[in-house]
Length: 230
Image 1 (cartoon, one colour):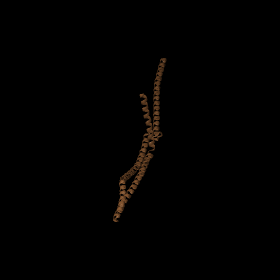
Image 2 (cartoon, helix red, strand yellow):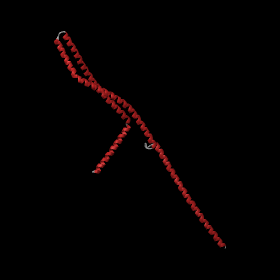
Image 3 (cartoon, rainbow, N blue to C red):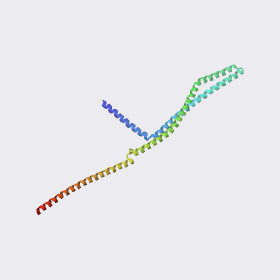
Image 4 (cartoon, rainbow, N blue to C red):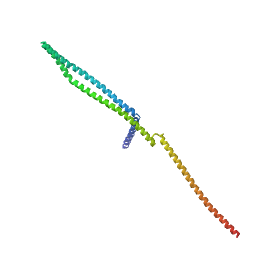
């Protein structure tokens, strides 16, 4: 069981490694477009925030307008109650004060909602402003990142070319291979020359020994002739 567990674990690591390698290749190939898309996504989120902020501000404006209307009506009914009293009509003054009370109750009930809407609107405006600043910074950083990435890739390609570890048809590596091939051929030629020279020396030695043998025969012939003539 342990064998299969270990095998599965190793297979899983290999699969993850291949997936990560593939994703790295995709990210390398789409780096610039991915960075720009990230900025576009941020702008999309900004647009959503702007719409939400606009809705909140619209709600606040509507509530504030209605709130101000009841405050204004309360003041108007207060003035009318004074006019009625000045005219000696207390009953009419009471009615005016009753309407004023209704307006005051509306003002009181709406106060919390108006304050909450104002706080929400202000917070959203601050968030939108902050998002705009971050997006401006992100756009500047994106341009810088893309430029740095392109410079790094160009530098890498030059280094790979000089090191001969780049593409398979690397011209620098091809020339280096040619030089090594020529060097090997030159070494072989020199070896054969040395072998040939060594062979010639043996032949010369054989000829010298043959000459020595020939001299001995001549000497024997001369001695034989001398004996016969004696």
